[in-house]
Amino acid sequence: MPICLAVVLSALLLLANTGAAADTGTDPSMVVDKYIQHFVVDTDGSYRLTVDNVKTIVLQRAVQAHSQYYISYNTSLDEVSEVDAYTIKPDGRRIPVPPEQVKDQQEPASSDAPLFQDTRLKVVVFSDVAAGDKVALHYVLKRKSALFPGHFEDLSSSQFYAVKQFHLIYDMPASMLLYADAAGFVPVPASSAPGRQVYQWQYVSGPNRRIEAESVSYLDYGKRLAVSTFPNYATFARAYHARAQAQAAATPAIATLAQQVTAGLDTPRAQALALSEWVRRNIRYVAVYAGAGGVVPHAAAAVLNNRYGDCKDHAILLEALLAAAGIDSSAALINSGNAYRLPDAPTLGIFNHVITYIPALDLYLDSTSDAVAAGYLPPAALGKPVLLAKTGKLAQTPSTQPEINRTLARFEVDTSGRGSFEVMRTAGGAIAEPYRQAVRDTTPAERDLFVERTLQALGQHGDGRFDAGLLDGAGDQYRMGFAGVSDNFADLPGPAGVATSFNFWGGLGEEVAGMAQEKTRTQDFICPGIDAADDTAIGFAPGIRIVALPKALSLAGAGLSYQASYARQAHTVRVRRSLRFRHAGMICTPADYVRMRPLLERMMRDLKSQIIVKGG
Image (cartoon, rainbow, N blue to C red):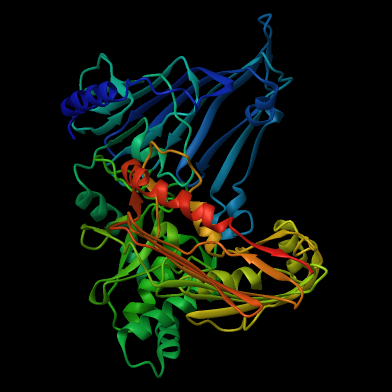
């Protein structure tokens, strides 16, 4: 929105946020005394950024984290200079950081990828830092070439520390209108030179609520400032597409590969899935964020030759392969974290990932995800707003996708309380490949100890064997098994309580526990669909008397459906549970949680229920 409307909005947001919320989120270990970001932007979109930062280390536990500072930059685009850093002791002494303690190093994510050697970190290591000291830093970063020629954008957010001064200054050419979306930052007057327009915001310090489990990103509801010269997302998409489209040229090698991979597949969907799966399995993903690594992907041919790339490189190669097979596609910009809201001012700060969209199939593909098969999306990509680069349109990924979670277990308990067991776990749909990949990634030695460690987590001791199932290939269903003995399954002769719920790596009980992590909620949170069922048979040896069973339970409401039944058949008790959850989208509100919580509490009580038995 234009700056005048941003003033009104930020004032309204501040009024809305001045309630008596308890400050449960501010970390007292460090105080930000001063943080000033000053951009001076040229008409071509290049800029000079000056940063001044002073922090007080209050508690010893903050020394390690704040006694060094990382400046991320791109050697092809940026120049870092005027680094001046020092430690300030409580008595006023200054201990300068010598030049040899300002180190230049490869960004860890790209250290083994020559294609990305221009992504660097300048590490400033402060001297003689202790609790009670201040650390101060001044530096200048000059962006020599804009990510988007003729445009500028930026996204800033608060940290969860006490903040005394936090200013964001944007000195712009008068010809470049700056749009803004502000929450927790208020505009302050600033003088401008002829031909320039200076915009300035000040952070409004105040209470911070801790980030609740599985909540949406702080950027969705917290204090942040997005500024951009792009008036809308369509313009932003055109700028991205203009820089990326030339890299998607299909070379003869790409055309030949597309023909080989799609041979014998007679539908565009089958062909698209096969091509995405080939890229997923054969192009190593190197995690460089879209902004940090620039917005221009490497040429599709180079990505194929090197056999690795970041998200935009994966997307450009897949786009070229699809085009060679006659399938039109588009890059889709998305947030790879837990942000579900786009600021009004378009910025790369919120779009840090690129996936692929096929309009004719209404199909989204993410070939960077090594644990999610083609045709499915990683959970973090579900129900997300996306910007389609080719058309400039905003869209949304699907909120749900097929997945099932099934556990079939059989226990046999002898008169000493020792229990033998066999368990079969089935993961279907979207979660089949993640389970399969997780097992692939474990060593044989780790698998040998899996049952023993699982029993320890259940408060039991024993051992057994793990059947990894079929790990080669892919498919929409994956089965794995456990078998073994628990030496203390039941405390006999009793009377004793025997558990009715056993979580063998992601069972129904873990799903309920995950949903019920918070007693109350004040923030929107992520609530994916669930389809889980457990079927457990517990057989007791003759001479063990089954005294009492839990009561059956059936619950429905707030998108939740839960059933638990307990039936005795001679010396065996059959326990069946099922849990399904469906919501209109991926995001639930605190009001939704108020409706869910009583049901979740009843489920947790049921999951803790016991069969009462007594030995002879």
